[in-house]
Image 1: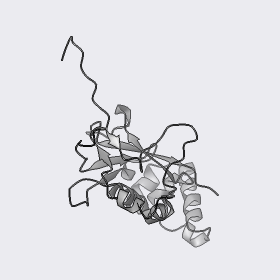
Image 2 (image 1 turned 135 degrees about the vertical axis):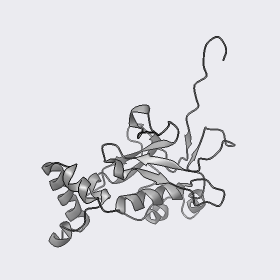
Image 3 (image 1 turned 90 degrees about the vertical axis):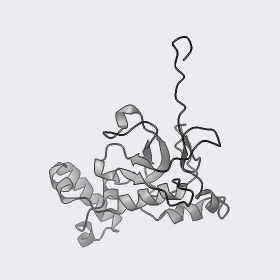
Length: 193
């Protein structure tokens, strides 16, 4: 430390395939509705099949240096959704880092899980439960009986299912006990139709 000034900590570096861009009108390289299998995003990518190798690259590095350590695990949070929707991404890559594919698969799997009963009835008000019923019915293709079936965490998103990328969380967005640099916010947009 020189002259009482501390150097700011470098922000983590997120792989461009999953990084959120706050620029107005920016299009994310993956055109992915998280209700669909992440393989759909891969197949629709303009550089496919060469992009399939990119899915095995590290999702996040501790800073922008190409030699920087890749994170072995990370936590994803979805703004304004219950803590049960937080996603822990663990590595499947043989080198022990969380890959782009690990992030996409972990997010998709978490959102496919049923909403716990206690969360559905105790934590939600009547309007929120009605919105979940509508979302479930739409996800099930409008079939009445299926609309009353199991509510899934993806139903919290309603039509905000377009993956726009992830960004580092700020202090106010951290789950209890988590640290900056290990938690990332999933930004979502509206699906067409």
